[in-house]
Image 1 (cartoon, rainbow, N blue to C red):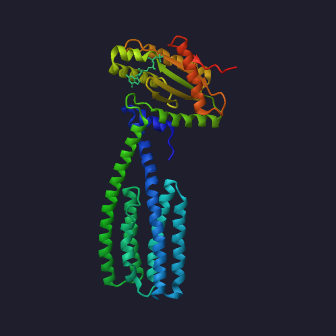
Image 2 (image 1 turned 120 degrees about the vertical axis):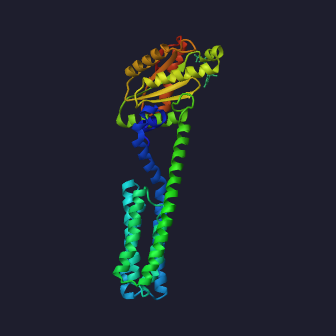
Length: 372
Ligand SMILES: Nc1nc2c(ncn2[C@@H]2O[C@H](COP(=O)(O)OP(=O)(O)OP(=O)(O)O)[C@@H](O)[C@H]2O)c(=O)[nH]1
């Protein structure tokens, strides 16, 4: 599953008014989740189906009920079953594997019918196989629509087969009884499995959001910031674009805590984080590194522009109306010097510049000066 910086920002940081806009991306990620969790189940079912068909042929031959003159039919259809299972093994794209799952189902239903046509016991032998199909495949479908389509196939195919092979009335009644029961059972399994899947997906999302965002300020925590910033730096380097970073620290924050208490200190941190975030672009990666330290990675941004952004952020914080009196920040700015440096090198440079800003008196922006 690929997560873009924008998707992640939208999920983790979007205000409620943007919630509707992210519905589509939520749907997309549920489909990704299903591919992650459902595809192994579907592949397991198709592998088991291949083994079951091969076993049925061998048992049929051992029991001497397969008509040797018609053996080719069964073998041809067995190869088709194997081919559609093999296609499913290779496909990961959602549209593709769903299509192959339906193809496998159709070929398998035909395979059961062909098996009935090539053995001396006729349809009686395959009634359990037809009845098992809805139950066995009940968990494989991504939506109620897909499940309904699969049900139409698993219910229709045996009756078409029985009509073509002129099954007796008693066989038809037997089939009807089992397929009816199996279809109801499969619907129950599918509904409960889907609900479970949805609940698990929502829980997974919630836990990820909690793990990725700082509960005080609502912005990315250090680890997530590093992951997304690293991605942004690599992407910029791959495209040959400039990338810059800001290292930000609130000035004399300890004295704010000491003078006003930690609750007011917390409120000041929220004010600062919100003011900074509001002035950044959606593609910028912004995180809290810990305490009163923040960092920003600015993709496609040269030193000159990064300095302007930093000055804008500094001025915005200095203009905040805070219960802790005037708040100020110091900002260190650096532009990626050498592609071999990577994110860590870039942040190190910005950190050195931040120390220079602190040393020069705070409430300042300093650019990293590379040693001669
Ligand atoms: N209220 C509050 N305080 C925090 C939090 N995390 C860290 N701190 C405090 O933030 C202060 C950070 O101080 P420093 O950055 O070391 O120093 P400073 O006072 O800001 O001084 P300079 O950085 O040199 O300007 C410490 O006193 C921490 O206890 C938090 O989540 N809430």
